[in-house]
Image (cartoon, rainbow, N blue to C red; front, side):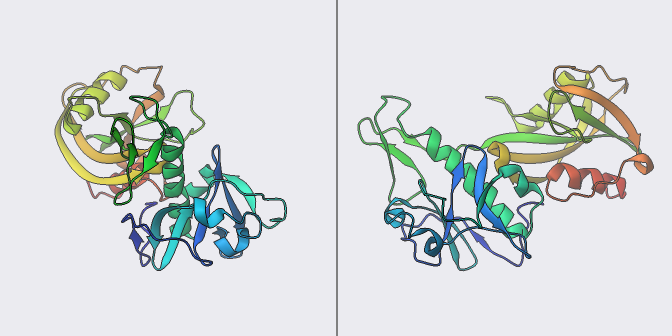
Length: 278
């Protein structure tokens, strides 16, 4: 999955360490990131590549995380005119780009960029928010309001019935491939209750034996995905919520289409069932 970057090591401890010439600079505009393509894959600029364009780039940088010995920082404003080898690319590239550890760095940095950008002002009193010195948190100097990075829990649901797996396609989305049922956890709800509710709402089925599989950070939507398998409880006739899904149908294990991409928890869960591991 996208976070599996071994043998590289991701370190998300928040540190007040200034960037140096060799530190990586992550720059974003809307849903695009600055990078270049090389024989190895994507590559981000280092501060030495950008310093001539903005002398204050070191002062405005925000520490994000480290991968191995390399530190990554968020930079706010640059002039790209002389950077002919670099270009803005849509963040969707991080789903499949190589090397995987740079793709993971790029999308994780984008999640933090979006959070910082949407929390410049206090939601309680409207004053300017300031970065904390000790942890990744924004604090209002006027009323003391504290804001932490947005992480939304959501479930990925593999509904099984013996040798069958329920697969679906989203309605009104650019993603047209088969997926599993999914949904966000609501206030006052356990993840297991989310599984049962989402299955009932989206396909009108009851489930039992809800069991946790594993989790995945999914920075494309500020989400922490929690994977569950569950068994059909009763009749398997689907009543489709057409606002959420374009279709939902049962597949025999042997008929499940092969999934070639490995970035998502959804695809791993599909192939795990297809290969007889569930």
